[in-house]
Picture (cartoon, rainbow, N blue to C red):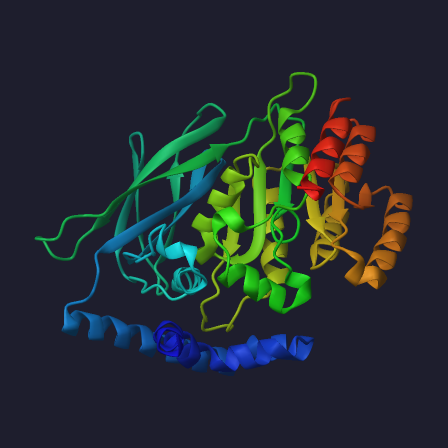
Length: 404
């Protein structure tokens, strides 16, 4: 086992030793140090050298695997599909039999964090007659804005193909999807993932590491009752169109496949995911989670200026603060802010949020700190956002899942 861990985590140790040490401090000072230009440049340069070394070594040994192309779900605004793809080496994931043992699961999950990215790859992205070109960056990511014209609400497919440098090499092809929100929907939903819909234990230190590295999609637990709550939100009321769902997390894009599989397996509504790149940049070693959420919220609100939003998060991270900031900037566009209590181990935090709710409601902002999914359904029903059957359905589902 030590040799396996050494092979898998060597790139992380070389490129991110300073980042890991500082993160363990968990203070504002550590975050400032991580984001300092000098530290960022040093670790960014180290990461570049490690990636180049790995690639040249694999080419020299003839072990470089084929190109793999991942197309993430995108969304449409201003008649453009905003999409994101990634080019990297074909991953090697253990088969179903291997995943029955913890070492195999650990190996599989660690590999999500150390893929060999392919920078500088030219990509062609297409939707119907529209075609745009993009180039992958140093971490293998590429973004594109594909003209769509006027198209109906719902999910649409786009296509992506690599342009090989070698004429003898075949291009790699991937299909992706993007969402056109229905303008007649009463609101859209922006939901946190970690400890809001997926039990990760981010507020409990090692629990988060254990859940990330030692569990598969099928063994990860949903927050009780939340899938039922989201199903009633998607169902809506008065025959209005289904709202669009945007899932926001500070987790890395490496976990995209696991998260989409989890949401589908646990019957959460299909939605667009906004994750982050954990790789070092020249301006910062690791992006601030709060800043990632703040920028993403502002982007969504800007792209859909006529849309009202329900914001759902938990008490464990930055959701209350970040959601309140956006609500104060756009008070007339907030249908509800729902903050879920993450548990008794944060009792002091709960008291702060109860006071925060009282103050914000007095200001006219619909901010609600709720005990669980059923309490959230009760609040949203009282706000006329859900139908009359929603509360009883969510309460019944919550009871079943707590005793399962």
